[in-house]
Image (cartoon, rainbow, N blue to C red):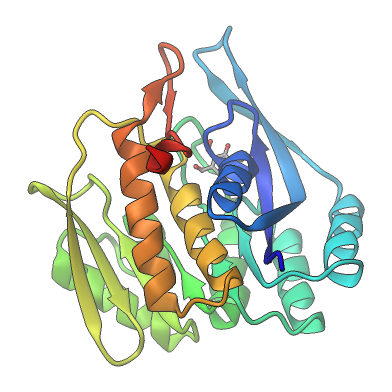
Length: 266
Ligand code: PXL
């Protein structure tokens, strides 16, 4: 029996984030991965590694979704880079049409090298259409502040307030990751299931390259759900996975580094 997961995401040609990170994570966690590609991101070595985004036509994305969902089926899915409101609407329609339950929404709104991944209309559509369809959402601080209509998130109390607001909009589990963005020696994570706030602290991994960490983390949660785990167990496995991948992260070039997805094997 092979459990299957789908990612609706962009391709990060440099291999650290996007569907490359998702597929590597699915593979490492023993889950069969499938992709509906939304765009191709190329990094320009002649322009300071500027990220150039080449969108894929919506009709082609629909074809990929039919291949996977009508033709094969999946046990869990996640989203990554969704560049337009139309695409967010397509994802919402698809979740409804196939009655998908194990839905992880990683609301990719910002990333290093790309100023605005999401045009404002796509961010607004994500807030309106995807939050309520998500079993799990995995925003970082900037994305959580946007989704919760808060000017910024600067401490644990803000994180809890944002998690509660996002949960109120219909998402079952909200996981806000501060990563290395808040001061202190720990990387903070707040999990809210509508009843309890769980505050998790992991020692910050200094000197790590964290490009693709958000994609990898949400893909690991998705893989756990595909295998039939409860959210809390999938989350614990994902935390262990991301910690080892970060600890063994490595330099790619003068602009970037990447997580090591196979590090947990050692
Ligand atoms: O890390 C955010 C991200 C997501 N998806 C794709 C990306 C990036 C950042 O580079 O390229 C395809």
